[in-house]
Amino acid sequence: MQIAEIAVVVALLSGAFFVFVGSIGLLRLDTPMKRLHAPTKAGTLGVGSFLLASMIHSFATGEGSLHELLVMAFIFVTAPISANFIAKVNLHREDTDPTPPPPADRTWATFDTDERTEKLVVK
Amino acid sequence: MMDTALAVAFVAVSLAQIMAMVRLIKGPAIGDRILAIDTMTINAIALLVLLGIWGGTQLYFEGALIFAMLGFISTVAYARFVLRGDIIE
Image 1: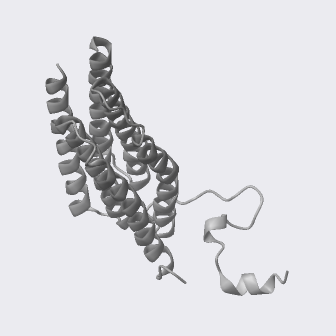
Image 2: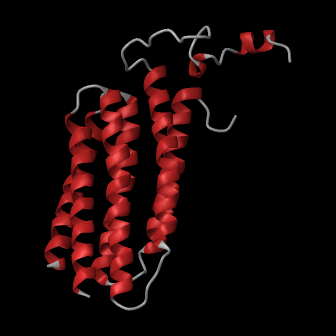
Image 3: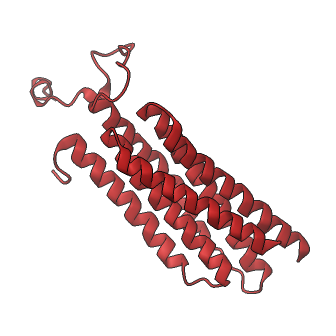
């Protein structure tokens, strides 16, 4: 019982730390791409710690439950996808430094959406 | 001991929510606003989970799951609208 309470406290404090640091990064960093990396990683780590605390607490106080794992799995799967979409928005709106040329192709794949060139390539 | 940790976590997540809202209002790039909305959804999930621990109940779990799903869908829809000018082509 005592060990479970200590584990819940540690998980709660680490989650609070990660969420807080993520939002400080969102507020204080200077370019949009730098601002992107702080809350996407720290937010999921923070919420993951909170959900871990919730699971340990539910097992310690009687009826155990594991369905916090659903939220955790969903956030862990979707966070990189939404971060990728936001990075694409930053690239297309040119809120970044100019991108370097790609090593192999004509341009980066995310810019290669011109319908005319797609029609030229007959498959 | 756990009440103190819960209070610390509530204060930290609330401050994080306020900071994300400041970034949402300030902008300046549109990607920052999408990111701020996404962060506010994540923080709302954290607040719901903390509320569930504080009350010792599982009632808020479904709310957290719906927040996770709708937050992801709205982030992708907003980003896709900015990228393509349309959500479903």
